[in-house]
Image (cartoon, rainbow, N blue to C red; front, top):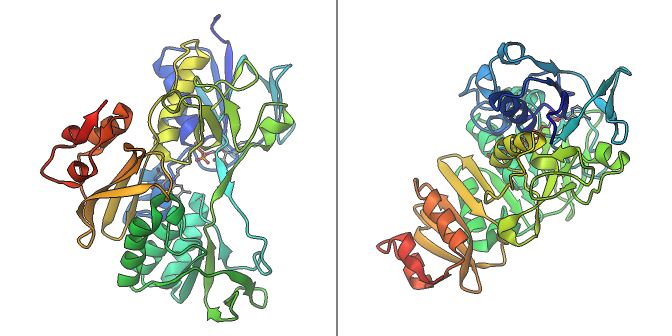
Length: 410
Ligand SMILES: Cc1cc2nc3c(=O)[nH]c(=O)nc-3n(C[C@H](O)[C@H](O)[C@H](O)COP(=O)(O)OP(=O)(O)OC[C@H]3O[C@@H](n4cnc5c(N)ncnc54)[C@H](O)[C@@H]3O)c2cc1C
């Protein structure tokens, strides 16, 4: 494929920034424009609910690159600039101020945005979401001012924010529609472990609870539950998941269905347009053609570079297993693979001590594994998943049996 003269990247998050870096690392010397609608240069989001929220990390530490990196590498970083239209045929994008940019290859890395709740009072002052640096800074200021934070939704971000707010001294009520936090992903046993963890740290966890309204005069004052109970609070954090930012791609005529549909090389339905990160729904070689769209840091980190090399003609499939991590209080975990909370769980280790590896197993094969406060096992867990071996649950659960030896057949 002839080398492109000009590459535009829409979305200056982790996937976009890593793609731009990779283009230069690969020796590409054409024009690169990295367009981001946030005022900030690219940064990583995991610290926003963890150490940066608690001010245990410096603001500068969250950025992907040093400030001078973009100029030094002739990457035209346009911050505070939004792409409002893509013309896939004419190979142009339009920016919010009307400027047009032409491209030979385009990467869409527009990420995801917090889901809204269609609740009365959801637009009151003091009702927060957590996606951006300013969101995290607002939540920090709220937390140090004290009072009670009601977190609606005990997914990863809601749970981590609840933990950090508690650690900052707030009273916290965590409301979850399901019976335990993270039940859809982890199931009742491991989700229950997180329920205990929060309760031990003084969080009021209301599981199986529905919210009817957020109430207050101009500013949030209380959350009313479906049963009628009112919880007085100084702020509410809504953590009910995110949706991929696909509107631009859809308007440009690209195939979209819960994400921009891309092949295994991250190429979209338009030949010169790729997508990476939270917004990309990719055919995954390991999952036999199933689509995988995940909202994980590692996915953005690694898909950006693969998309960049493919824009230069590499035809490299993206075949890493899904991987994410979470830290809540003193419980650090890594999770690899894809499973559902309804799959069988085999546990190696000590649930009460919160030192374990949990495996989600279906038809005798390990689909996913999570190590909690146990380290340096992630490669072995991923190898077990990749082997598709039938395992012996008793050997899998036995800490004296090396993980590689838990397989019965391949
Ligand atoms: C608080 C928080 C904590 C997290 N913690 C973890 C964790 O512990 N572990 C983990 O694995 N993952 C975690 N994640 C998820 C991880 O951060 C995301 O998967 C990752 O940020 C995705 O990167 P991305 O580049 O695809 O998208 P994003 O980071 O969303 O970046 C996309 C960028 O594109 C911009 N954009 C969108 N549309 C346009 C447009 N039209 N024009 C210009 N710019 C546009 C957006 O404003 C944004 O800046 C966390 C996320 C959050 C919010």
